[in-house]
Length: 563
Image 1 (spheres, rainbow, N blue to C red):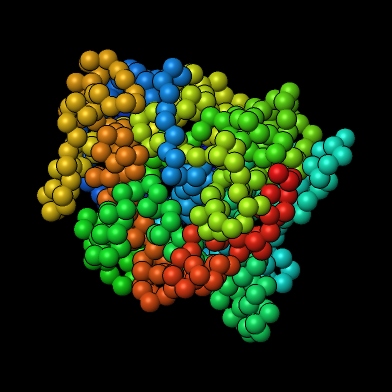
Image 2 (cartoon, rainbow, N blue to C red):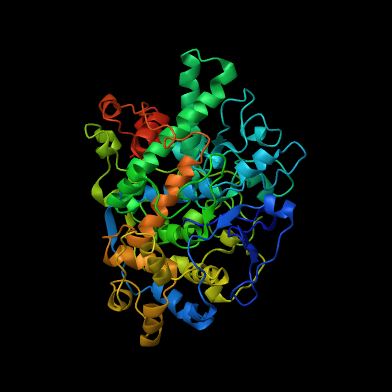
């Protein structure tokens, strides 16, 4: 569920306007057609998240009209077509990818325009960098963001779940450290439920919220270890942050990216550098965010989403439905079970996550890869969740998003506008995003070896199927998002390759390069936090190592509800 940055003042999950460098501000048009740029003032330009355009604009005649977008979106969310699993990608990586997207696209200063914000902070806060600003905000010394931290200014706040009344098991008790911290005060339930984290999108579904809680634990464990080692308090927080960020970046490059992008493309980019995106930036140039990445290539995660999960001991055998993962969040949902009205932000009785909805991380990440001898950290294959294959199909629940997922509560949009595929395709048209064919030509012109998809590839893949007229249009002018998904489907064995793989790998490389702490700029740095010493010796640090370290290697913390 990877999506671009939100306009905070509208409280919509999906950005409604884009400041594209060199073009101006492109805002939503009433009919979903191409938007005309509005020239921003200098101040407005400075205060907006900076996007860029990697390839050419699509001609208006190359864009799908509303009827064609509707047909394609309905084909991509067809409930009668089965989408295969991707057996080598644990389902947790779907939502780790969403967490990463929010790190890349957080507008860290959007609601922090006090006088003390400097130009440097404004620029840094609007730069796509893999530096965990969605976890840290502007840090504990900033008067607005210190609320995310404990009084010591070192540890991040944690949240406490709400016990389920009448449940005599552990689910009936509140457990500290297993929910996001929440505001807890205010006259409205929606105010009290609000997550106390820099990016409220990390509470838009339960899976990404639980991953955020794991990163809070990760940071706090690093702080505790540095305190035990006697690190000076003057440098302790920044030392902890550097340690956390660099381990995170290493995990992304060596574990996350090769699971979703052709590993040969990832290896080429990180060994030989970028060939199409910001190839030679100046020393002080901040990265930008290509709209081809944000609006198309990195929306691959929508295809990885399952309709049902074996969530934990209580919500097992597919009972962890996608609808419930939205419901048990504070941004899209109401943290309360049916029959409370999901579209009423004041409905329901729970103001914190019910304890019975804590994730069993053993079902989301494959710990047998890291600790094959720890049977208590493994689950049977029929209880383990893997991602859906990256292809041109989305599970049907994404054809009807909850209104809270895009700030639509109180509205009655046409049913097709609840369809995530339709929303993605419409956003691309609004921005006149380059077609897949245009991007192939653009890459080839820059000496990147990309094999174009044929008309048959586009029309006859195993995923979405559509009319001959639409197939003919796609063969000439295919929306980039659909194109990169079809590349993965027919040429990448379920991983991005070609145009899509190159865009994602190069943007990740630039985002790490542009981070305050960077393993690209510090090529001799190596990870050292895996609890499995043999893995440290081999420079291995994957998401399972991060979780093992954060949860102290304890099965009762990785799965507090029990097997």
